Image 1 (spheres, rainbow, N blue to C red):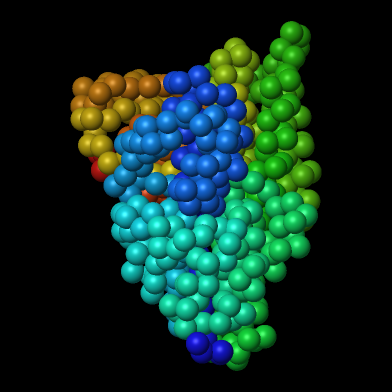
Image 2 (image 1 turned 180 degrees about the vertical axis):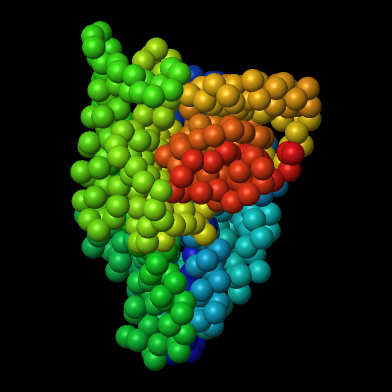
Length: 490
């Protein structure tokens, strides 16, 4: 074993794929079918364990007559039906981290409690299998995590001593096993937060994979000379910073959403602005005030452009928040429950971070340029449907009467070529519907930047395309038309 050889070992479920949560949902679905109570709580105990250990936990919980084989087969069937073929959600930054470590000539292994057949299939479907030099799976070792066997075997294959090996894990049992192996445990918590024991057993607790990579890069000097490739580290630090900013914005937006949910519409909340049916409520102003104060606490030097304020069309440099406190104000007034908070963060005139939150459904859509798009933390992607098999969303440009007829004529044209059309009243949520694969095309003949600053980025990071209706570049300092598609529907 080479004392100076540095290596990294990854767990799979909960680290590479968002599969812990998805499989637990499948387990609960089958449990509900058979009237088994508390399955979610029991399933959490199985995280990081191999099949034999999982089987024993379920039998202990539901009795010796529990038909584990039948239960497992039904849960697996649901899981594969939903997620086979590369549809398993991937954690943010996975490919970037693999590429960075390979660029640093650091060998990688995967050590998962899952059976090898499933590991190979899931990694192959996602296009990740070639990043790994070795795979060690649950059916290849006798003792499951929290025993260190699986990691010790991986170290042996890699030719790296455990004290030169970083192990990235999300589960308690995985961190216990990495600690027992006397390696360098790096925890990236998934659905279970780190407790005091995990803080003691982990060398470092990261909020995401980029942060884990930063830590590993920072430790290379302690083990051997740092590779002469600072570019990897610098680019990674930028992504860590973006994820940290996003996390702070999400918290502010979620808190602001509570103002909308608690709104009292009983008296004098509405005033009018210029244009037909263009309303503002005291809650638009209240939410914007909270957002402005708290967002500028995150980035004190940023500019703030909100719908309910003064605007200019100068192009700014640096950071700029572009905010609609309640996108879908008429819906809000009518208690229609299709409204959202939209926060776009622009950097040097280009979209950088997008957050759209529907407080009624508790759906938080987010995106970071060059990293990805998510809904409540799960990767989202546009559909692959042609227009004829798609749904078209549109806005009527209600404040611009000269565009009303053209809007409906265009909608009718799309109606004849698609499955159907929809009009929700919230441009931000319509854009997120394109990003999430719920619809295929959205258009509106004129919008303000705060209507689309966040949603447009979410679409593009989900694999879609956003231009003006005429095919030009979207502007973030003045109004423009919007055409958003899944890149297929035209």
